[in-house]
Length: 214
Figure 1 (cartoon, rainbow, N blue to C red):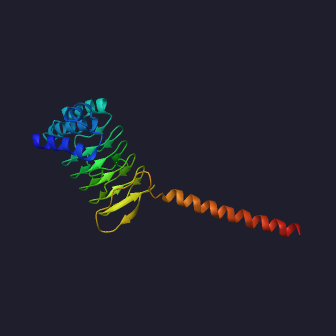
Figure 2: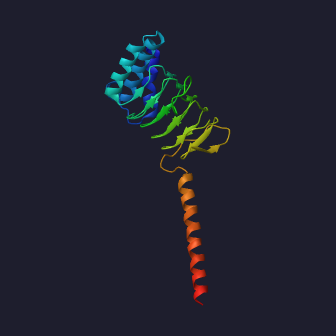
Figure 3: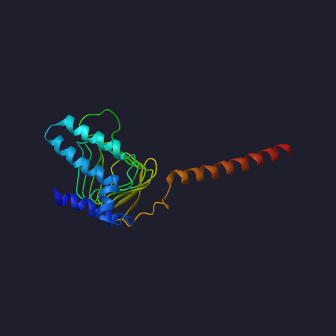
């Protein structure tokens, strides 16, 4: 248990250049508080003390702004950066060395029963505001771009962006660090194509008007 707690602290120093000291991390990092609270709540959940587990998770949510259902399974070295608005569902399974940013949702798509939340494999990064919904799997070493909505399976070593999320990089090796400020945007590309088509239609319409006048 103490080894896991130590790893939870060390991963913050690995991932966050703003972390300066152990005392600062332990006292001020809400993501760390949420993870520790979840590990306690999950232990009670496994003992079928569901009410106590939910009470702990709700108290944690009140103080941290991060909601993790006590039934969710979370691996080692899980890192939540900033964290406000993060939601992780009951049947979600998260592997080792996973990082998520603020406003990420790992949720369901409706009122389905059984496994209804995502499975996140090892070494995955999910950027700010991304939504991963349904009983799908995000493969190892993959990255989900900020604001993406992912509804389908993502293979290993992939980068996904857009609404709905689309794989834009898959080369069979570990994906390089994703620049959050310079992401491909399939939606914007489609709008640009539509603007070109509209401009072409306007030009053709003007030519037809001139021919009628002549």
